[in-house]
Image (tube, rainbow, N blue to C red; front, side):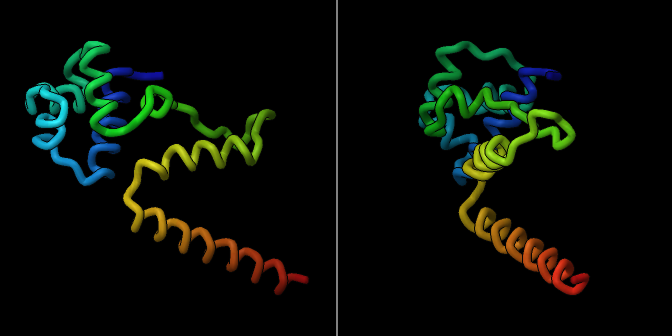
Amino acid sequence: MGDLKRIIGDKIRNVRNARGMTLQQLSETTGLQTSYLGDVERGKRNTSLDSLEKIMNALEIRPGDLFDFREVDINSSEFEISSVLEVHYQFLKAKKTEDVKMIHRITKDIFNSIEGSRQEKE
């Protein structure tokens, strides 16, 4: 799985940024020092469950959101559209609304292009 502290830290940073929250704001909300939070985000620090709970509460995320590391293997015999959609949902829900809308427009354009290519071949 890799370095768990770094993975958790990256996820915390991504969610914090998606919420438009600064480290200072997270510090004020959690009561934890900004330098400590920065170290947690960079995977340089172990964090207690109590501190992790404060961070999750401030970011309004559940433990399942923080510890969901599922990756999609399209070559797997267990590949299912529903699992892909769930992974994408978990990824996108931490993003800014305008970014999600942009991804939706791009995806729609890609599928329209694919359908157009298929119709040209027929």
